[in-house]
Length: 289
Image (cartoon, rainbow, N blue to C red; front, side):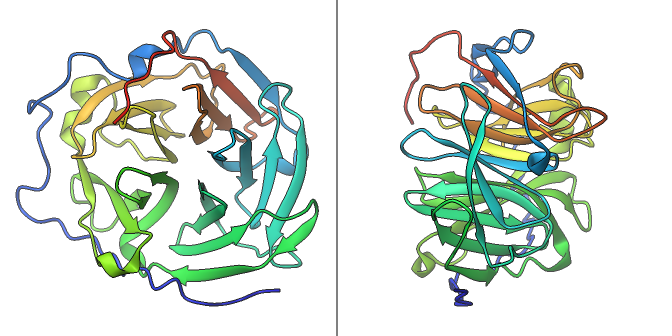
């Protein structure tokens, strides 16, 4: 059953007020989240079956299960992080709705999928190979933002949507914030100054392909074209950046954190099988926001 009911989320626009982009020189911490991981030594790496050749998003449920989706259908697949086996799958629509799906977030029992044009789908987990009732909302981002990344920030109770491309180019990466409580109204986006990226060894033309909220509160983004990671805080200050090994990550398209701080990166098919790769943190003690 398909329920086309608006979520009544506030419309968001790219509005770059003077002084919103903060310099990296302001209040930079001495240690970073990315320092916790050795990206030359994956904890585990698993090839994914053909139905996830175009994997485009990852998310972890509150009970620690890993889910992913491809970028052509509104179908969510459960992935065993230990074995890489892909088990149950459920969809919005029967047959599954087609679109350019670019991100997955899980909030309690609610699963959110977003398209590059800003159509947000919400559904609940369903039985294997069944269609879940769903509702859809147009975030009304217009042509100003091509979305390619979605996660949930529990501290502020908002969905984070990273723009791969913004028009016109404002000299900043734009991360929209969509409150789950529509009564809160619009929130200003997080702006990440591109000029600050080069100071951390990442090209200024970094295009996010996924975003994830680290358990410490930092925001981590990955770029498929550059095979790079960038860490920022909630004010948009760049904290760290690094290049990933192309051997392990030929096209990273998904990010998610497990409850123990393990970072999962999904790579879609690019001359080889799609994979999900896990990195356990060096230290298990995680500071909470």
